[in-house]
Image (tube, rainbow, N blue to C red):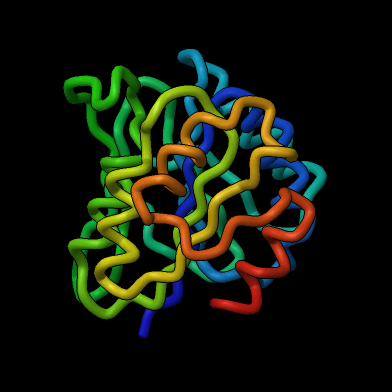
Length: 187
C-alpha cells in the first residue's frame, strides 16, 4: 500500500512548514503540500527548504511521481491533485477556478487523495485563514485516512484547522511541535 503525507497550510504556513519539515527524515514517506503563496514564491520557498532540510523538496510539476524522501509543493497559481498513472501515483498541476477563494486549494488536493484507492495516507491541516482543506480532509478521514489538525495555541491564525476540527475532519489535534512525530508514527 502506497504511503502518503498530504498537507495544507495558509497564513503562517511558511514558518509552520519549515518547523514541521525540519523533523522529517531524509527517507520520509512521499509528501505533497498545498500552501497559499503569491506567484513565484513557491519555487523559491521549495529551493530554500531543500538547501537546509533532510528530504528533497521541490516545486511540483505535472508528472512528478510520488517518491520516498521527496516533498512536492504545489506551484502558486495552480491546483495540484494526485492521479494514478502507469500503476503509480503522480501529481497533476493545473490552472482552474478558485476553490474556497484560493488557488492552489488544499480541498482539491485532499479530495483527490480520498478518491484514489490503495493509499495509506495521513492528511494534515496547518495554520491559515478561511476554510480551505476542511471538506477535503473530512473526505480523507471518511475514506480511512488518519488526519491531524494544528491546535489553536500554536497557529498563527486558527481558521482552516478550526473549521476542520469543527466539521469532524480532525482525528488528532496537536501543537505544531508534536505533529511531525505523530505523522511519522502513523505512516
